[in-house]
Image (cartoon, rainbow over the protein chains, first blue to last red):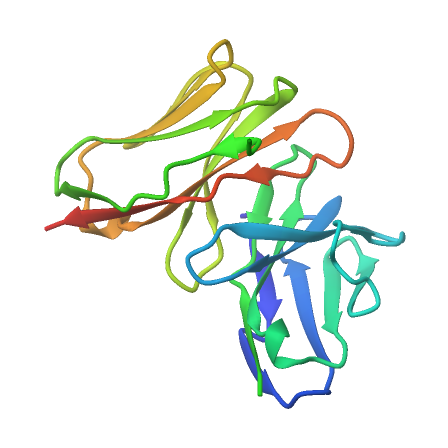
Length: 114
Length: 112
C-alpha cells in the first residue's frame, strides 16, 4: 500500500513552454500533498504545500505564478511549470500524506528545459 | 544553524557491517522522526516512522530517538550492497501543516 505515482517520469521541453506534472496517491486518500525540488547530490527543497480544494501554500522564494499547483481531489495534485527556462531544469518530486502524517513520495519527474 | 544537521558522507562500509546514521536537530517542537532511503534518480522511500522518544525495529533497521539530546539514529544490521543509497532523516512538529524538515542526506556505500 501507500503508493504514489508521478507522470511523466521524464520530460524535455523547449524554453518558453509550459509543463504539467501529475501526482496521484493510488491506494489512499491524501490529506495533504507536497511538491519538492531536488538538485543533484542535494537534499529536498520544499516548494509548496497543497490541500484539496484550497490554494497552495508556497515556500519563501518560490514564484507561485511560475509554479502553478492545482489540487483537484484527494488523490490528485498537479504542478505546472509555466514558461519554463533552462534554470527550471531539475528533479521534481511530490509526496502525499495519509491520516497518520506519514509522507509517501512519488518516483520523481526529471525536467530538462532546452 | 540549520534546524536539522546530517553528515553528508560518503560513508563506506564492508558488507555485513553495522551501519550507524545520525541526525541532530535544534527545534524541541519536533515530535515525529522519519528515515528515508533514496536511490539515485528515484523518489525517497519511507523506512522508519517514529513518534517521540524511544526505539523502533523493523527487520534489519532500528531507529532511535533521544529527545533530551535532540539526536536520532538509524542502525542497519548485516548491511548489503543493495543498501547503498542516500539516507535522509526528516522531522515534523505536531502543529500546522505537518511539513517535514529534511536533513541533507548521508550517502552510504556498502562494499561487496
